[in-house]
Length: 210
Image (tube, rainbow, N blue to C red; front, side):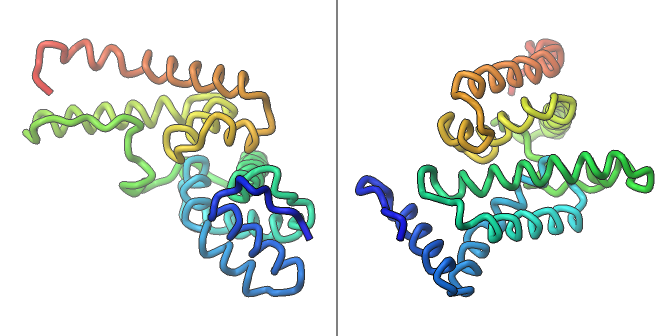
């Protein structure tokens, strides 16, 4: 049985207990882990692939891979951080496979109808809701998402885990299997790229009230 660190949170302990029960043959325990993290994993994958059916397929593949590799989980990191790493790698592989398949359209990769949750801007603007400000906020949100889509994969993943999923730098480093310094650099570069994309839009409206 894997030792649970004394300082582990209640969530960590609960996850580890479910992992141990799964390894002992309790399939219901793994189902509980799937239920607990499915929505978060799908939300993460939707940042890479917006087609709902593809998101669900990749999420399912993520949990299948996690189940098969569960014996490798030792509790050194939080379970969802470990799971996120598998999700990111699975999404990357799926994207690579799809881009090599000529029958897969660009709309399937980037999405035809982004739902509100998946298309929300990284920074939400607070302003009086006039038709003008609503339109301006929508334009900026679209620019932010376009800038996010245009980022290299490693930068997009890092800033997504930080800004959309709220992971700490340490958790992102574990999920992406890289040093914390690299994570900080990637997030800084991603924010700079996005800032440069929307800066002209903000400057053009500098004289207007938001």
